[in-house]
Length: 205
Ligand SMILES: Cc1cc2nc3c(=O)[nH]c(=O)nc-3n(C[C@H](O)[C@H](O)[C@H](O)COP(=O)(O)O)c2cc1C
Image 1 (cartoon, helix red, strand yellow):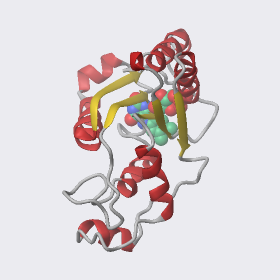
Image 2: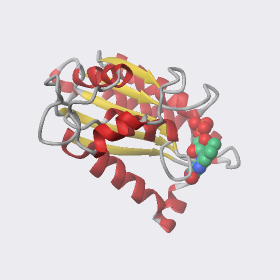
Image 3: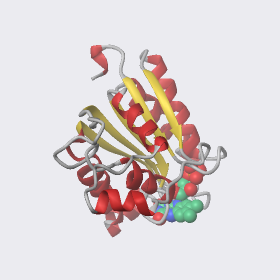
């Protein structure tokens, strides 16, 4: 995709601490984007204090298919960022075999009826454009050997790619940065490899 020139990338990022591999993965990925001359926008969900609890009115809008009910301003702002982009990238640590609640709640609220699903547009005629690319960059404490043995990560990959991204993006990829636990020697020994891979992923978007 990158060979067609400037790609506008929307990064949805969630990690509670800057003292993390995930933050360095984000920065290396962004360095890769910059290296290729792509532009980007970041929603740093913890720093923004993004609201991830759905209100009762939001619940009613979704569950009763009430397009006439309003979409909150903070949600519309995220949707505008999506529609101004060519690609969307989710960067987060694995928490209890899932994305952090901060990011799961982003999907609860931002994937609204008429925008991200349902046949119609919302009452203002807004709908989500189909993006060229969707990427998931997930930092995990456990190793790939553990994930292969247990099959645990397969569930998250399916949910992220087949349900949350689905045909909202044309091509999609799930990238794992594994063995990052502070209890494992691999956190240090694989650090530079992980960052090089994040950089390359940014270059090649
Ligand atoms: C609340 C919490 C839950 C976690 N759950 C998992 C998990 O289910 N599987 C896993 O492999 N790592 C798990 N981890 C480890 C994180 O993925 C870990 O923070 C990360 O791999 C290390 O990268 P970081 O420096 O970016 O935080 C968990 C960490 C926290 C704080």
